[in-house]
Image (cartoon, one colour):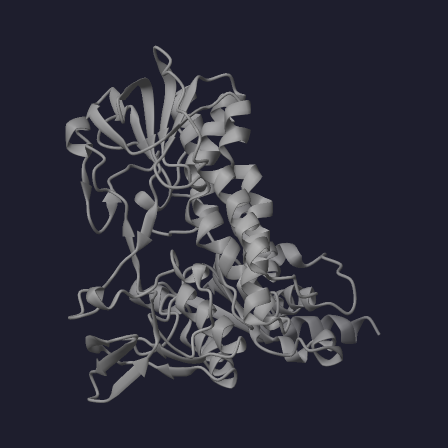
Length: 486
C-alpha cells in the first residue's frame, strides 16, 4: 500500500468532501408530503437500507438524520477503523494513515449521501426527530405524518461511571479519527473488538499502548483460547494488556491523565480512549408520546418481526438488536421492509449472524460458544483443525490459528464455529452459509477445493466428523467385507 500524500490542504478538502455528502451545511429540508408510507428515523445502515429499498419499491419515504448520513459505520466505525488497521499494518506513517482514513471515508460517502437518497426519491430531512403522537414526527418546525415508522437511531460509545473519567474528556471511536498527532502514551479502556483493533493499530503506528479490561480476558464474547491468540499478537506488537483490572478513578493534570487501578498501581497517559460498551440512542425521541416501550439496557422492545409495542412502529439495528453489527442492521432492515410495507411475517430470530474482530490475526465467530452450550446443557462435539497443518499454512505466512466447529452430539448439525487466523472473516463464510441453509458438515463430503488453499480446512473438518461415524462395529464389518472380497 503506497503512502497517501498528507498535507493541510488535502485534509481540508477530504473533510469537506465527506461532510458535503453526509451532512451538507447548505442543505435545506424539503416541504413534507401530506403523508408518507414510511418515515425512517436514523440514517445508519438499518435506516439507509430501509429507506432506499422502500423508495425503490414505490413507497413514499421520509428519512431523518440528526448527525451524519451513514451512521457510525461510515463515519466513525467500520470504515475508518479497518482502514487505519490496514494502513498501520502496511507500514504507513501516522499522518499518511490518518489521511488514508479520510480518503477512503470520502470516497465511500457518496453512496450514503443526501444527494443519492434524494435522487432515489427519498425525502431527506436533516435534524432531530421527535414523536409528537403515534402517527406524527416533528423535525424542527416541520411535521411528518406516516402510516408506518421505523426507528433506526443506532447506538454510541458509553462512558462508564468511573470517578473523574468524564471530566478527563476521553476520546471514543467518534473522536479518535480526528487526531492530528500520534499519541505518545495511549491507554485504551475496554478490550472488545473496538478496543483491540485500535490498540493494535496505534501500537503499529508507534504509540505506547496499554489496554485495560475488567474481565479475565479480552474479547469476552469469543472463545477464550481464540481470544488468547489475539492477546498474544497484541503483546507481540507492544501492547501492554491488563486483564482482570478495574479503573478506580481518573485524574486530569494539564494534558496528562492519571489512572488509578484496582491493583493499586497508576497509569499515566496523554491520550485516553474509551471503548467499553455502547449506549443505545433513545433520548429525545418522544417515545413516550408514541407509546413505544423501551429500556436503557435492551433499547426498544420488539418482537420477532421487529414490531414495537405500537404495531405500526418498527425498529431495526443497534437501537434494538442484541448483536450490534452493521451486517445485522442490514439484515434486520430487509425484514422490516417486508413486514412494514407488505404485511409480511418475516422474522429476525432465525437470522444467522457472524462477527469478526479485524486484528492481526482476525477472530471470527458464528453461532453458539462452548460456554453457551455448556450453560444450556446442550451435548456437542468439537472438531478443530490448525491452519498450520495445512500445506498452504506451511507455504506462506498463514500458519497462525485454527478453525473449530461445534456440532450437536450424534449429528453433523453445526451449532457454532470459531476461526482465528489470517482472513478469518472471509474464511468463515462457508460455515455461515451452511448454518443459514441448515446444512451440516456431511454436506461438505463432495466438496472439491483448489490446492493448496486455506479453505481446505473445510474438508479436514468434514473428514474428522466422518471418522466418528466409523464405529468399532462398523469398522469390523468393513474389514470382514474387504477380507471376503479379496
